[in-house]
Length: 335
Image 1 (cartoon, helix red, strand yellow):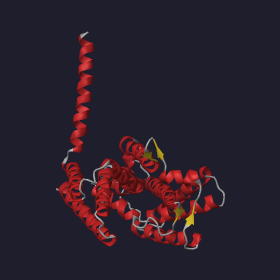
Image 2 (image 1 turned 45 degrees about the vertical axis):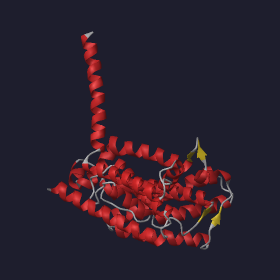
Image 3 (image 1 turned 90 degrees about the horizontal axis):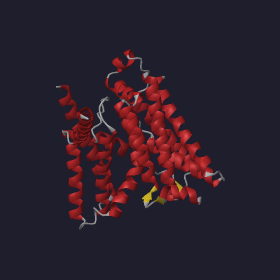
Image 4 (image 1 turned 30 degrees about the horizontal axis):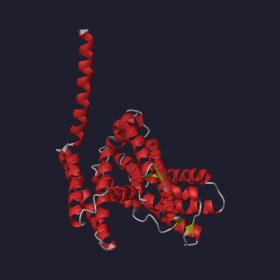
């Protein structure tokens, strides 16, 4: 009886310890700063917009705008932790949106067109990985090249014009809801939940951290760094392609000029969330907080009718701030 009670007590204590550890991780200096920043954004814009900011409808708007950037941010988070970066997601998304629209316009069923385009996105990721792993190009240069290639191809395959779509199922992918929740938000939540578990709980996730944090130790541990990088590039491009298809569904058309700066927003969110550009450090949870700060800030500016070019300036300032915080965090770690 005593043994049973002791076991129950230990189990209860373990549960309490887990809860305590969860909140301790949330309220460490980096995470606490992010939470405070997010709260400040909510308070300031609520005051400036006459309490129109923190409403149910506007929260939904922020979540919808965050979903596509968030999908790419998942891949960029993995990449940056592994010591890489990808500048092609915006172009891949635009190309994919145009391609899926063309396929649907030619009579393809969505259940065939969508997987085909996402699979082609994986191929683009494989191309990026090959340029980095085999040709030994710097990730910045390699993905800058593919960014230019697929933005140009997006214009070429549609003649520079938007490709309109009337497929009802496809339009629901971008604008439909399930139980009142927008489908793009559901897709992002599901993908985020899966990949946060992969990063934090699996051997592959540990390999991502080792490849970025200590390549020598990773090699001695038998980890194939090239294979890890290849998988991550393919994941990132697949998410970019999926995001581009969702965006096309939202706009009822594939547009070659869409998703410009998508990779910029994704990287900003990731770095803002505490993922070190030097690799080996960061979490998807932090990246999510960074994403909410970025999209919440952008939404607030739009509600205040700030001109679009000033919004662009503000995003640049946010990226500089994020990189500055990253530099300060790295200095603290190296002391």
